[in-house]
Image (tube, rainbow, N blue to C red):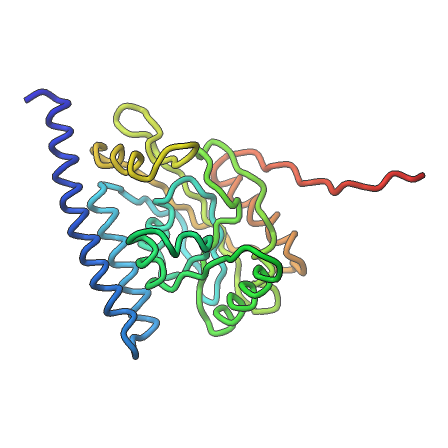
Length: 261
């Protein structure tokens, strides 16, 4: 059996184990959605399941710094679909995701059971989501967002969209920047990045072939003291993450000005 055949055999075996883990996750979905299920149990089960997923994929998490207390808005750069599992395995938190995720097979059910807040498209929907996030934060909760709005290969940052930072204003919560950095696989390839036209299945198949993938999770010092608007919060969080990743801060968007007649 040559090296390629052995690698394929390992990937198939790990895929089988992953299928069993997903099946366990679906059973947890049923348990979590039962009437009377406690919120704390939901978040602990979500953390346990995602930690198991990372073990099956041979993802090793190196954590730097410490996470602050709740209530808390967690903001992170976005590289891969794995970001959610990496954060969920590190801290007890809920997430914000686009509404389309709810309809994804299996993943949508798991996300809903984990208490994901969905962002609907349409006028007024963002404000409605911000109101829900504020209620969660005022109740002492934690929620994580990816303010870039899309993924990158990890070699740069996109401008942080400030809209959802408004949820933290006036709630007494801290804003916790988290920097995520994935290392290459044994061949030097950036297999974690989920970008371009790559499908989830194709990305997962590459991950199943990797012997190990290392991701550094750096909890930066909280920001927000003295910030009275969402733009300042977004800017400070982005600067903290850029410094941790040793990446340049994207230029601020300059609003168009009407020329004088």
